[in-house]
Image 1 (tube, rainbow, N blue to C red):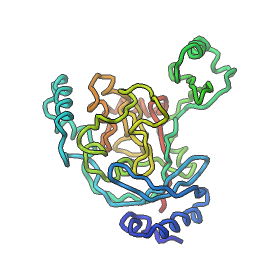
Image 2: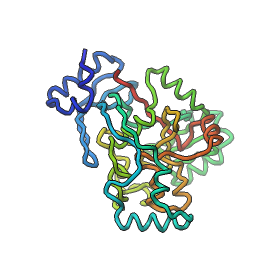
Image 3: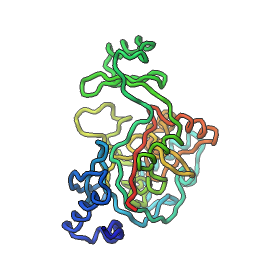
Image 4: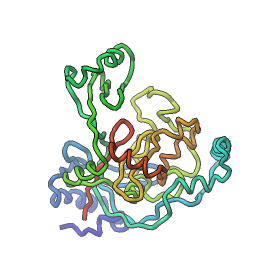
Length: 325
């Protein structure tokens, strides 16, 4: 039986690579539903983690050590550079917003110190509500006009009224149908499988590892990044900058159009705003503000209740965690 305190960064980081590997390999003894796949080291934005990848239900999970960290945002560490500040001032001025700090504070979760337990975390996000169907499925019959349009065009995907989705995957055309799922049922379903969704504290830790800057890479916007919604389609096999794994080996908050569902009373969505800022013509900095580690989407309770009644679709995804208690 492992000494669980070794799963926390303060102790784990002091272990030799050999001792770390022993600890990581022993996890599957107590949790045989996971199989050990390989050791891995991830480095991003000045942080590094020596860890391991596990397989469960055909999906990759990564070990993330626990830690005590400060989360939330209230002030700059470095301050914005001139280009970032100028763009933010000009953009917000169009909406009669003069208090930049006040705007940012109202958009972020509050500052607090928390202890996050160690866990195994699903590396890639899961869709909600979509399931694959055969091309001759009766479900697709009412949408043949849309399907023929998809075949004749060079679309990567086509979604029709949150009912069907046609996609090209590695040159093959695949068809999907949609079945609605409530927020509560998603959580219940995940917990019945022996997992959970991260709460807001866990999600922010997994995203930024306790980084105190506005974005996880710093207080200023990085205009050299390759961004999906501003640089067009990919011209090579390399992922967009924000899709590359972070220092925990996780792809998180890489697309402001995409929400990630969390299990928390304070909020239930992180990592995006459904594209509201970008679609509103608010430029790069504000458009990508929703991928900031501590961004908390703002919406009224009526909107939340409506969204929770059908939590899936093209813009809402989830990842599972398994706590090492």
